Length: 306
Image 1 (spheres, rainbow, N blue to C red):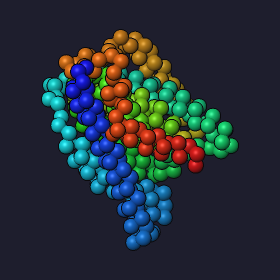
Image 2 (image 1 turned 60 degrees about the vertical axis):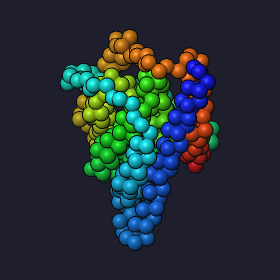
Image 3 (image 1 turned 90 degrees about the vertical axis):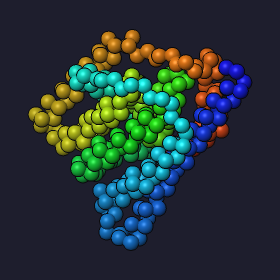
């Protein structure tokens, strides 16, 4: 890559890093500010877990996210290729593969965090598990199945991939998964969010249709958060046994499909390609991406130590 082109490309990725860092900080700030204001003005609204969760999440979605989208849109988007259709059958197969991928990576994440918990003589918090097991199923459905997939797919797939895919699909996919994973702010979720983020980004690069990745994300969150928490209340019943067998069958089927279709997971080469050996340096070793990574890795470390 020529020096001037390399310099300009690093500036672009640095700008992306800084804007995503600013946006995510604004999202967290909106949560903290509005939650504390609500707690001060109407403390009864945050006396239970559901009220507290909604008081912190809604301001982020209504205030922080629009500002983040506005900031990211300041970076010009590349021309988006024509959308491609995905049949219902392929969507279902993709959902099954996504779930298997998520399950395997979640197990890996749990093993790592449990080892860390043992080493520090305590437990490691898992925010998603807390929401799924503590919140009312309707609240969980609204947050995890409706709001989160739409917002996260817009920010970490459409807005990001559309701006960096000209440097190669591999760059767009890995960067999307990495930034999406860090945004979840805990180690266990980082592991499976990174894998799912890459998977969703791959699907988006193939279809350029946001609807497919949003609905896949919704399906995964529904199965993992809402349906899972409801089934836990049926432990020991025939319903729970049937559910467990179905989930096991889904995981095995997903693994088989991943193996059978492994040769299809190939990234297309773009016209503006970062030369081999310089990709990490150009994409990640710049001020913006370093700042984004350091801040969110620090948050994850702090969360592990609490």
